[in-house]
Image (cartoon, rainbow, N blue to C red; front, side):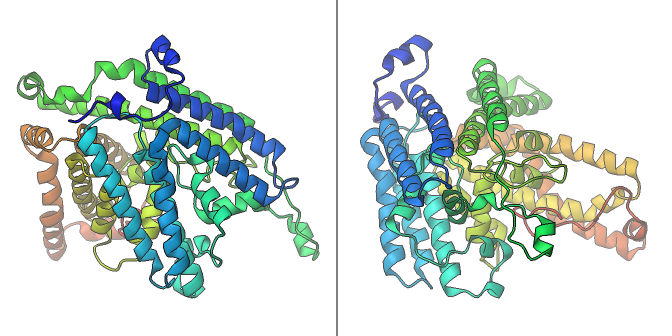
Length: 506
């Protein structure tokens, strides 16, 4: 390839001495500097520029200027793309018919992002060096979600929209200051998460404070009591500590389980099937700790600025999860691929649901996975992962419909079913995720074949054969009716939610 990761990186090298001192590449040092700087400035924004004493314009400008400075520090002249993509999309939003504008913005943003992805793959193939594609992916989510929200707000009636679309609909085209501060605000510039425009504007204007009302005041016809958000200090400290622990786990343990080992002849030919699965589970899990570190820290930055407050739970404790991007515990203990997807990169899931899943009438799952793959780039491993994800999604729906009802007749059977599905989910996740990390087509296919394509074959059987067997049993009147009509134990609802992997079970 044309250059190494260090040559490709265009950010400031002022702190190269720190890089040499601690042994981290300069791109990672700069990333840590920007994140800790953002964490401190987030506290300043919340305490010194709070919405009750500062104008929305000053809060917009502060977030915009700091975001531009951090972006330039991290990416140098590459940062021009951070402004280029949203500028073109804003021009399209302002000039085109809002009935069709959102599709043009989506196409323009994806084409621009795809060009940057392609350039990265040409000149820095397979590198994990920090570059502009990460922030640009988040910016693509922002501009496209805003375009669809403006389309919904200006051209659709409320009854025509889904609840999610109604929540995000925007009835007024943003001004340039509002738009670019939304795109560049420093809290989520580097690694996300995507923050939808309505949530951001509510944060700027302080409308997020009005999340609870005093029932007695409301009944007496008085003005609703404004309940100010609680201090985020405790939750910020917890998330920062958890983030740093994840970083340490990643740095210390990952070298013992490098993903590249799965390409070795020794691993392919002289290890058992069970060991291969075990190694994939460990290596892919350890790589996830890098994402846990980045997303938890980004969540802490948002919370420290006051962004992310989501009301109170029934027990009175504050929720700071409005913009949380990951639930690590839920992901690692997920009982199904659907549950795992809902706990991972949650902002992207909401974006995909808003842009694709709720708007197309046919092939919802395939088109959703397709957009996700294109948004990530052009490495073959991405497309293998998402194709396998679609296959397993269809297979898991079939299994849930056909087999799960038999385990709902007693609490013991339900617990057994949950244990089995949790274990199987560990194997399935490792099997479909490793290609996303490895990136290579040939090496991934070789490992699939070395593992006899077992999950693929089981998945295809679940889709094609299992429903036929179930219908045959039902036609013969063998046992299925009892499984259907017995009252489930410990279940509020037994009907499988088969509307797709982006929907949560009720």
